[in-house]
Length: 351
Image (cartoon, rainbow, N blue to C red):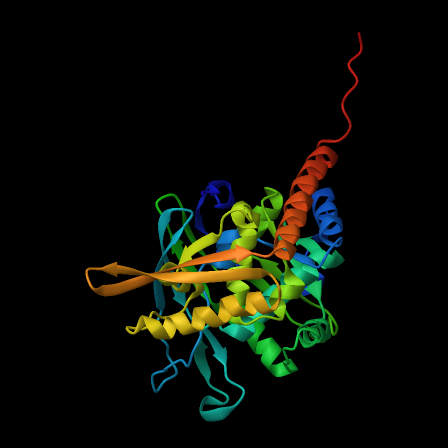
């Protein structure tokens, strides 16, 4: 099913932005942002812009650098909402703080740690810390808040690694192309770290995918609390099912194929698909252990005698169905409420 309203109807690049000190950034809120935050506070949810959340922008595995610290650009092809898409990820160049390249500027991909930090930033943004910063959706926070937030979900990170992850998120360049959209930005349009002028607070501004989803009221909800306690693939699958409004249907399973799902998740497809099957089996089993899935199975897809893919069928549990129904209701009620509040009271027409 297509949800094309979630894809920005625009072209262009906003990669070049200035990283100003927080004291120089214009901060404001607006009614729509305040109402959005108040809706999300009602449950363990966070918001996601589907394309931003599901595109394969992260790298999982061990990176191989050249002697001077360079990495290859990642080029990935995947389908989104029925459209063929291409993604190019140019790694960030950041000063290394340890090991062989200590003190040198070398390149880094965004990985699991950056994904955790990015999701935590969005979570803080929905809990009253979201701001309109120089006309772009962002969040003002402290480094201790991110460290504590990740620790609450079993992810440890120190100050140096947190700052490094923020710089990687800021310095990575993402180029996205589909038949209808061309997009080039960093995951974070700007980053301000604590300094002598502002020793406690940091800030980020999110890219136009997230900013546009907020302004167009097309952010989707998912259970952040559950997701942050899961492995990478299980979290991707949870987000994907939460994004699909048909995912809550107990009468028929949620269906997807192994190769497209792994491609969208940023995983390399092994020549021996059985190894990929083992990864995905573990992810679905994780949802089952969390009582979100009642049962599941997969079947081979062949061309002649060769197995080319696997088709998965996942039956959500009653618990997950109720969860998705609550999310959908909160989404619908919130959108109506925001629309009414932003529009204001009806104008009385004099006779």
